[in-house]
Amino acid sequence: MKTSELIQALAADQSPRRISLGARFCLALGVGALVSVWLFMMMLGPRSNFVASLQSVRFDLKFVDTLALALPAAVLCLRVLRPDARIGVFGFAFLAPVVLLAAGVIGELMFVPADLWGTRMIGSNSMHCLMMVPLLSIAPLAALLLAMRAGAPQNPGIAGALAGAAAAGVAATLYAANCPDDSPLFVASWYPLATIIVAAIGAVAGARLLRW
Amino acid sequence: MSASVSDGQVDEKWAEMMRAAIAGDEAVYRRLLEEIGRSVRAMARGAFSRARVGDADVEDVVQETLLAIHLKRNTWDGGLRLAPWVGAIARHKIIDAMRRRGTRRFQPIEDFETVLAAPEAEDPHARSDAERLIAQLGPRQRDIVRSISLEGQSIAATAARLSMSEGAVRVALHRSLKLLASVWRGASQ
Image 1 (tube, rainbow over the protein chains, first blue to last red):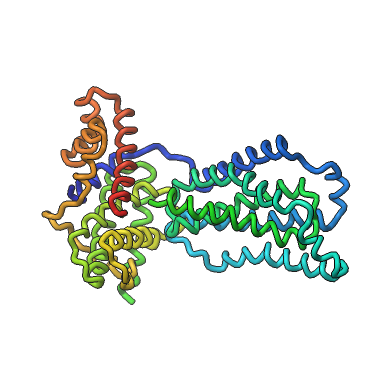
Image 2: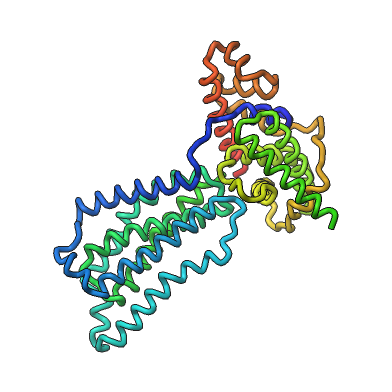
């Protein structure tokens, strides 16, 4: 086929204006998060002392940490859907959750006697965390990947990993409301591990689904 | 200096044409795709010759790039320049085509902006794989794509000939183009 012939077909294909990539992305994130909220309420629900716990700095810090992951990951993920995107300084946004976690860990190490460090870190349900965060990530990750098929990322694997990180951020925010372990030592040990699992799944799925 | 000034003008003109095209101006869109095709052709030819892979696939890369530009228009931010966006898509497709040929070592690909000044016309004898790939579509879709591209028929004429509604022809055409892109991608694995 000649190029001029293909152009005939492309010019004839005037599909009506679709919703924008950004709107599609936000819609997917919203719907995926809602499904996870529903799943969370069905399976876990917030812990019984949730309201009282809001007084605790350790408890609140968990949400600051998880949102500091979810927001930059989502913003960056949307950004790399453009073929000419440069991550550039936006990549530094990922320092936010790391710095917050590190600050929390240093504070905890200063205030808590050394013989408690081990128990605080292991917590009471690390395996539960490693299962529930990925489970609650499924809906947002799937919805995001579906919406992202309209994009054109230079590196589909990286785009998928970012979607995984954003989905894990949403899932971890929900899970944190149930998890009885509030120590930054626990959070810094298990939440990133759960995030990495979901990001890896996102990377593999993205490399397959987001090719264009 | 003068080259960069004229590139800036090309770019501004393209961005304006793309905005008109997105607003529904078919004739401008056709002209824009022709112009972009000429620059992508120059870029692909340069990249292939530096990698010493011959230029048998050049027209495939041009067409895959145009198809991707068309299907991914929504990833262009109307407030930004068009040339870097086109260049990124072309680079992606050139690298794909080189992988398809088993090239492992990549020569740096010329910046798209530098080829804007030296566009290349289509070789009247060059044919892409598209026709062979279209054969993999369903019979109705194949008929519609051929009618509009190879025979240059309008949507209305095609609809009348196949006794379909224009809307149905439009939907079928759009699906066919998306399918063509994915078949092409599959062929490049």
